[in-house]
Image (cartoon, rainbow, N blue to C red; front, side, top):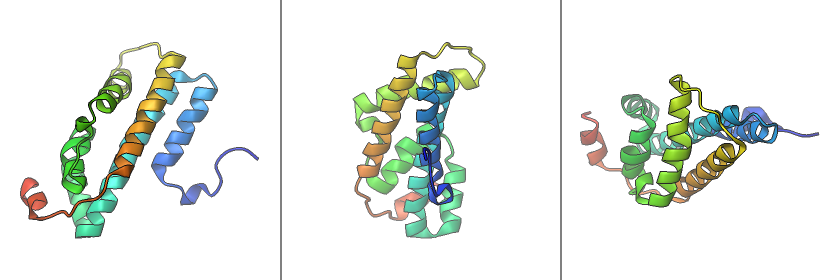
Length: 153
């Protein structure tokens, strides 16, 4: 048997990442790139949601993530609030993700008909994987009242 098992127990980002790998292996490079972008954004949301829920509870976590919904803001400001680090501090990693995943995804989603090659999808895989691994490795810092003042709560 091949594929995912116990899918209901897996985080959404993991399912998107697995789907991206499947699309890449099957030669559907544009679909793979889009799935890698969604996997990263979904991972960041679940990571931040867990951090904010632990500190403030479900309602505040939901409010914070609704207030700050752009992936750029989440991977910078919100990530820094919970870990003390921004994705941009790892310049090579950020630039790779920004140019080879985020920018290409935005162009595709907003109507530009880019031809996505195997190399593009493979680079999106590496950039997304490395960014997820880096964020996952961050040591959580204590969130204080600066979070609330930042969000004007």
